[in-house]
Amino acid sequence: MKLNRVMWGVILLFVGAVLLLENFDVINFYWRNVWSFWPVFLIIAGVNILFNRNKSETGNIISLAVLVLMLGFVFYRGQQPPHNKNWIGDRLTKDLDLDLDSAGDDESQNIKFTEPFIVADSSKKTVLNISGGGTSFNLKGETEELITADVERKNGNFILQKETSDSVNTVTFKMKDKKGNWSLGNGGNNVDLRLNKRPEWTVNMNMGAGEVDLDLSDYKVRSFRFDGGAASVDLKVGSLLPITDVVVKTGVASIEISIPEASGCRIKTKTGLSAKDFPGFIKIDNNNYETSNYNGSAKKIFINLDGGLSNFEVTRH
Image (cartoon, rainbow, N blue to C red; front, side, top):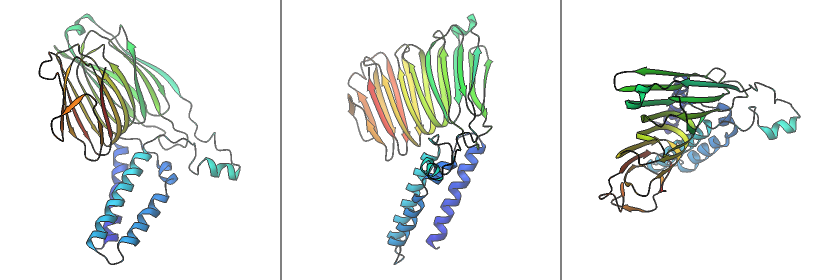
């Protein structure tokens, strides 16, 4: 099979996958960011010419590797909210003396969501499911309610709902749709969360691109799971429960996790080309790390990291 056909097939698969993920609200993808990085495709074409003059197998492998790497870069950049408000860029806009600032410049809307706390909630496990692309999530402290969410909304609609059984509360906060995602002036959403400290929490986050800043050190967190694409995550956990599980699966992301120094911790990694920085941990083998007090500590934290091209850092406080 000719290399050119394979490369075009990979590109078509990439575009189709991105469109499908957008349709299912898994990611927010800003196609105008791709336009800003159009020279990437010149690099792909140049490598193809340089390494395939003799149609060697090694040249084919190099060309495909560069293509995959460049498409990964485009996938990452395409999920970042654009700095400029138009497709042709700030520099060209100034040269043409065009005023496009008002084109599709949606105003933000502030919305507050609240789920009341009842006495029976104290003894129940509470599962919090969070999802939404192109959003910044921040934990701003505690509340007397079960959960509150102050949303600065620029696109999409959010919902907060609760389902209750005898022993478990399941709270879901998610972006319902992405109205206006294709307008020129979209920015990211901002969500300030507040949680009640009395329940035992299990937190599951699923998002394409965005930022997460959660200080959960004063909360009873049984597990925290993050599944995302291109994201920045700053997580701090405490030691109010005997065991805490932290699971992170990412594509291209920056992950910073802080754990109590008194807790024993084991890290298991499956990180591909990712960077790893675990100060104070003992390397057991290429994929496993432990703190020196792991065996003797009454409180334990288990961290599982899985990422393709990310930066993972675990520190102790």
